[in-house]
Image (cartoon, rainbow, N blue to C red; front, top):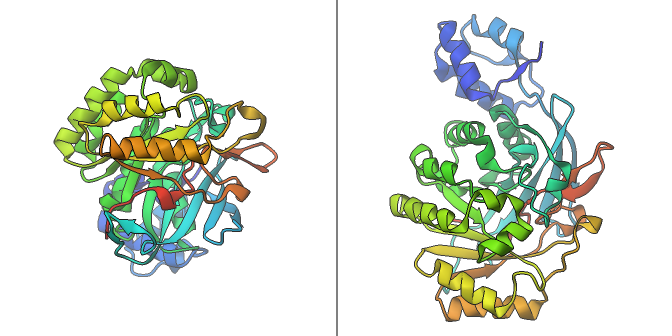
Length: 374
């Protein structure tokens, strides 16, 4: 029998209730496991006697194992290679940074040292974005709630995590129920992250975006737009055919009206494809009535998987100036982190020899992602 992760929130809650046990003991179990990685069930104190045989018969403290943790030469980025119970692997990235560096709206930033975790939601991805290495894996399976939360558990033993971004392997909104349940657990004891510190990135799954604010109010939404017109989007993101740009923008307008929150727009800079002045003006006109932050993302090479080139610095700066100066849209250029460990945007993928080749749309340049103020 395959054991379940004790962090599979709905499963353990259901089993506790069926056994007449109070579900309020579950956060205490989670807290003990966080603090005692190799504990046995009998070592957890103060549980009802009926809880121990239930845990032993159905659950593991962790169904995944940390296969390796690789530090970048930048000394602030660590990539985790995590082996799942089914033998597959996913990657997550821990980024440690000082929020006091730089400025926010022209003023010194508040805060201090903190860490962001970028998590995966699937093994592989169905979206097939042809600038992203994860798509080369194809889609293998969704992660369970427990497998998503266990990435946070593994990372918490490396650094205290303050922010979580769903920008790793997979399309989070294609694994909607597990992602929503994992985020609800992250915002409850013992993790107690603020929903304002959690960001979900999507290529634009329209029906799921429409549900997201109702299910997870105060969450940050990031949209991988990457082109200002439908034709270019379809060229570089085949899945965009199912989510026409006009419908996507209408959905985002409804989302913003109901949430009253800024939306983060991710835009990868591909030389000669979407980085010309005309594209900047098209993007500005598309978004000028929204409250958004645009993150311009330098393209990271992914070997033979793509023929794209990185936009040069002058093009990126000019693109940013048009968006800021002409359309008054807050626009940042994402700083590169973790390229040497294939932890940068578009570089996360795992092969069957367990060698890290890069792949996923991981945003390991998180210093450029504008996160909410403390």
